[in-house]
Amino acid sequence: MDFSSFSVCIFDVNGVLIDSNVANAHAMAQGFTDDPTVQQRIVDLYLKLTGIDRGNKIRIIQDQIIGIPFGEKEFELRWERFKTLGRRSMLKAPLTEGCNEVLAEIGKRKITRVALSNTPLAELQETLATHRLDSLLDLIRGGGDWPKSESLVRLLNEFHFVPAECLFFGDGKGDLAAARYAGVPFVAIDSGTGQFDTEEGFSGPYQSLAHWGQEELDMQRSA
Image (cartoon, rainbow, N blue to C red):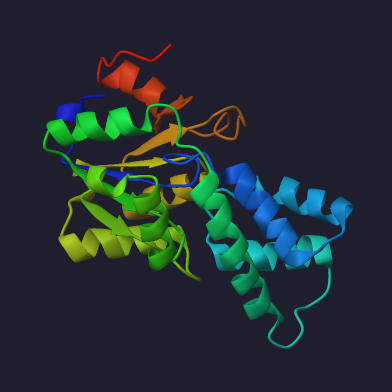
């Protein structure tokens, strides 16, 4: 990869900057039920839904695990419960390996650093500030009940970014699909799921940002 040709690095947050996927999966499960057996089924499914917006995750879980249509205002209830529980999990989750170091190094190279997440903006800003990542980012953009592809295209259009000059770092096939839709080169982060094994046309997969920094920026990896 000729990294010098890129002027913008766009980072998904959950699973890329913050190691929060498992915690969020349990938060979502608790938002649906108190039954531990059903909770575990929801956790297992949630962890396969990387790169998918919150609204569709809720709808998929309702369809595939609960198995009946939403009652009146039930979708909104699930959204608000996960908003509360997910906020707590995000604030407590640790940063991924190499997160601070890679963001700092990219900043030294005068490359614009963007956090792009399906998490609604106010929650995202609070989370990043709590983890002291806001000072290592130049732009923060949240999501909502719409796909990551739409969020990515909105970002490109808002700031007139050239897709070919951007790198999008993501940890799920939904992120990869968004990058392909927007024409943005993609860096896959996979901590061990193997979900990119049958995919092509991207850089990686890398185990973490630390691994990517070591391979592409010649950074020293922490012991």
